[in-house]
Image (cartoon, rainbow, N blue to C red; front, side):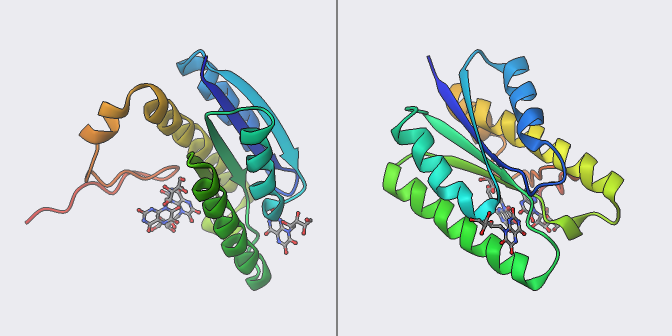
Length: 154
Ligand code: RDL
Ligand code: RDL
Ligand code: RDL
């Protein structure tokens, strides 16, 4: 059975892990393992452990970079670590980051975090079970959380 890892953080202001797990459970029958860490810089090793020790086939890394410059640097470092982990393991990590300043207030932030987590969970289902659907969506301007922007036309 396919095993999906969920790595998430206590720093985030919305429970993105819970939303992702709910969406996965509604759309596939994979086994799910969750590993919560303090912040986004702790995600790369959490993902590595989910592959090495829990034998996950794919992992979602969910987190919320804050709005200050130091947080943006932190997010870049975390992303680099997540990419290195993918290259080390040859497995996908779907990075679900919502920057705190993407939304104007707490209400919209929570809604964006929930929607992006759920939409990327569906991307995980497609990657693992229905890759042809992704091929059909190639070049269609898909976004997660906000409206899709759609294809550019001549
Ligand atoms: O290893 C412990 C912490 O260093 C780690 O959890 C960091 O990811 C915590 N953290 C920061 O130190 C920071 O300056 C986070 C952010 N910014 C941030 O914007 N988002 C986080 N963590 O999830
Ligand atoms: O792993 C899932 C996503 O994190 C990954 O697909 C990213 O490449 C998606 N993405 C961003 O998160 C982003 O902030 C993209 C862009 N910007 C971008 O400008 N172009 C992309 N993806 O193709
Ligand atoms: O052009 C507006 C947004 O698309 C742009 O700000 C993106 O960079 C927003 N974004 C992130 O910042 C991010 O960390 C997105 C993702 N992750 C993502 O996974 N999917 C998105 N946007 O559609």
